[in-house]
Length: 227
Image 1 (cartoon, rainbow, N blue to C red):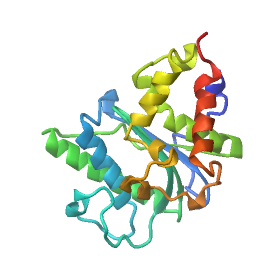
Image 2: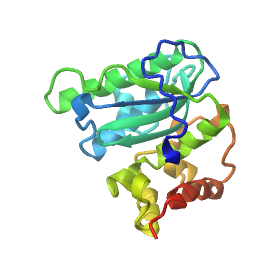
Image 3: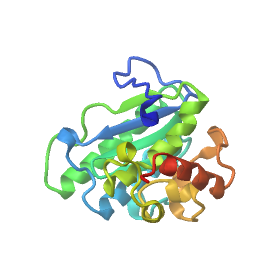
Image 4: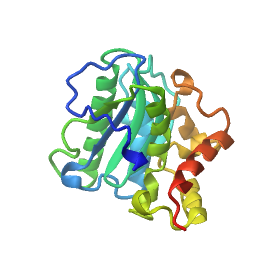
């Protein structure tokens, strides 16, 4: 199946994160548990994507707004895409220094784990070990990741769509356009504060318009459509 043709897993991560290289970062809940239980949890993580991406420390009161106006200093990474799912997340990033990506992920997951454990009165690790990383070693794979990440939510309405094809294309596209916990809407042209989470300047300009972006994803959705 074409969806698996370019997976290059480097989840053991015995390599440095190189500035200017592109990485697919992901992790899931410990024992596959859900890490986002309601919309407030998703929103908290999205806010942390912005405030944790900072060389300067942040305080919790900055989290009252999706992209609070405060001095972040130099950002640690450039985020090109993201998607949050009930028990895992995906990010597409490029680090701005050798330590930037690791620092960002440590701040992000620590802050969210503290929030989640306190809110739900639990203890212990929230995520399944260290975050996983795949290096996008060529242009084909990097462009593919934008589709792979943004199409993840389809699994919530049809878990076997990659194997069997989309059952209802119109319902699927409507669902994606209503899913607010990814960067899909930012590429689809919606104006929202969460767009500031992204820094597209360090990524190839694959999609110059929202129409080009949606056309690319539509091709993937209809690639193996059921007759």
